[in-house]
Length: 365
Ligand SMILES: Cc1cc2nc3c(=O)[nH]c(=O)nc-3n(C[C@H](O)[C@H](O)[C@H](O)COP(=O)(O)OP(=O)(O)OC[C@H]3O[C@@H](n4cnc5c(N)ncnc54)[C@H](O)[C@@H]3O)c2cc1C
Image (cartoon, rainbow, N blue to C red; front, side, top):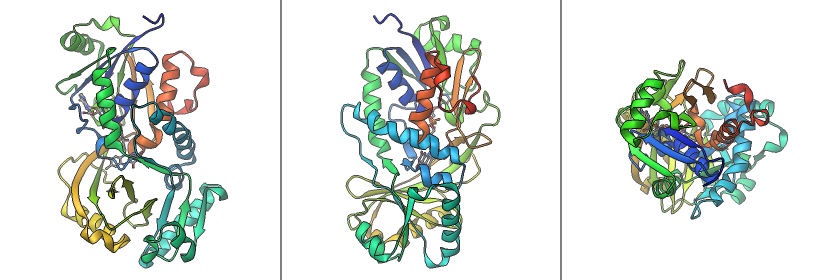
């Protein structure tokens, strides 16, 4: 046994819980994972997500730190994915931003904000000819585009499947499905660890709360932001880039997946409503899709899905120390964009290397 092996209890097996568990196991630690979710992860926002890793286009409408955290993650994702047993679709060809004629004023505002928030090398304006070269099917409907070269997307469902197998088969990991855990306290943790793992809570180095939206009773200021997506298979469309369509109401991304599948998302609605996709959102998403390329007319709708993003007041992620461990939460629209960067910081906190943190001002540790 490794001399410095520690034992962690992770609560919540969504995007952050499963990535963190995996990284802790890789570092030689033991992990007990407790979650109300199924093994597939279908109760998790990360399962529904478009999984865009868009540091530049997201920073335009948020704040410069988003780009810094995103770029740190973007440097880590290929390395992390290469440590998985099989390749996960990770496309880093960049994002093409387009707008219909009626939304040109909004496009101009977006461009001005890009000029203000980013450096000139982060993006370029493509004319029709350049757009034909880059993504000829997109040039059927658009005369120009803003191109952000350093952006990516990944196949979240494949990533989840691989992590499910890896964690559930790892000899140093025990994974139990549980009832809803409303509150984590020293007392409730003592009961839970005995009940599910026959382990006294004092045996754990720390408990790490990764319940996302489910942590509201324990994390002041945490709120939910509803998002709706559609997944389609479109044999007639062969985009090699992620596409962002300027829209007056939502940031619409079209994120490619293998085999001509695409995820279009997402609405952003201040609500914790987890009911199915509304007719209005469904129509907006579908018409946005069809307006990007007419080849989507014959696409098949594979899924219309909903989840809520866990968000803090400033829409930035946080790590907070508690009397029993840590809460890591608030990834909002940026779970994939931020996860490797923030989890790396958390691992440093757990190793007592706080002087090396990259994004210390986000944390309360
Ligand atoms: C529609 C949509 C599109 C998105 N698109 C993108 C994108 O393109 N790029 C990007 O970077 N991010 C995107 N996101 C955001 C990203 O998915 C989230 O930021 C991320 O999933 C948050 O991770 P998490 O682990 O904190 O929460 P989750 O992934 O939601 O996981 C929480 C886990 O905790 C479990 N749990 C919850 N409550 C309890 C409880 N009470 N007891 C026990 N277990 C509990 C859940 O079952 C779940 O397994 C999107 C999100 C949505 C909803």
